Every structure is written in structure tokens, then in C-alpha cells.
Image 1: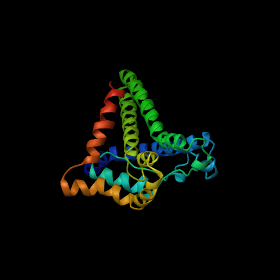
Image 2 (image 1 turned 120 degrees about the vertical axis):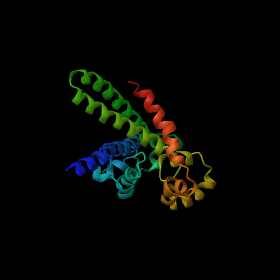
Image 3 (image 1 turned 180 degrees about the vertical axis):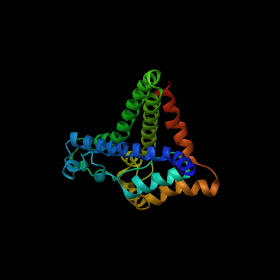
Image 4 (image 1 turned 90 degrees about the horizontal axis):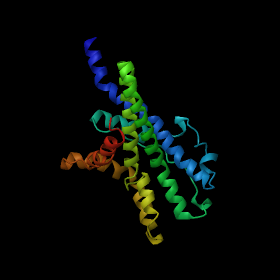
Length: 225
């Protein structure tokens, strides 16, 4: 029984993080689709992607396998969902529309992180009345904020299939777009190489360093208590 309790206590934080990751990813994708819809593009709505149903958004690799691998490796738990379809031909201003849609998901994560920080503040007050409830309110909200900051900065990386790559590509010359499509073909291998192969071969973790410098430091700012 003691071994079971020890095992559960070691995996419980990762399980909680994965559970908190799911709504964060779903709302991230809904943010993309809603932004496109408000700009006049009904593609995401017609495809049923403006729903909060996780099954419509989760990707087997990005939403399940990748977070589990991160959890087993003891790293920050991040992931991605199936990209929301949109048609930029509906936008009155093509580049402006693409930029708004690309930034919408990370912006949603930032707002969710701020909501989590306010709940953390609530947890500090509840703690004085009921330490057990206050602790769990604070713990869950803190992790929720951190996960959303991780998602925000992770998705802003200029690596396909993440939002950052599509945002950067908006400013590419039209004659370079063929290169964009070629890189997209190897997107998953590039991402896995940065996440796993570079740390193994060179004993450096560029992704971990980047997320600590961005999400980690910003978390200290929005949750100072």
C-alpha cells in the first residue's frame, strides 16, 4: 500500500498537469477559429471547430503522446491540438487577418493564465479559513497559469506546426512560400529534434531554457503572492 501511495504521489502532479492541459489546448484552438469567424471566415464554424468538445480538437501526438513523454521525462508539459481550418481569402486584409488568427490562440492562453493568477489570489485568502481547500485552490490555479504560459510561448516558437511559424511566414516574400511548404513536410521531425535529439546529443536543452526564461519568469510576475 505504501509503494502504491508513493507511486501515486510521484505521478499525480503530471496527471493533474495533463488534465489542466486539455481545456487549455481546446480554448487555444477555439480562439483561432473564433478570431477567423469574426473576420468573416466561416470555415472553422462549418467544420464544427468552435465547440468546446475536446474530441473535436485533440491530436493523438500533440495532445496525448507528447505531453505524456514530457511528463515521463520530467520536463514542462506542453502540447498542441489539431490546427483549426480557416480560409484567409475571406479576410479583407490578408496579412492582418493571418496575424490576428495566428496570435489569437496564444492570447487566449495569456488571458487564461491571468485568470489562474486571480484564482491563486483567492486561494491565499481561503487558506486562512481552510488551509486544505486553500492549498488545493492555489496549487491547481498556479499550475493552470503555468501550463497556459508554457502553451503560449511554446506555440510562439517559429517551428512548424506551431503558431509562431505561421506568424513569421506572413512576412515572407511570396517567392519564398515554396520553401515554407517544403519545411512543413518535415515539421514533426524538426520539432522532435529540437525537443529530444539536441538535448541527447549535445546535452543542452534549448526548449527548456527558452520556456524557463519566458513562461517561468512571467509566472513569477503574474503570481507574486
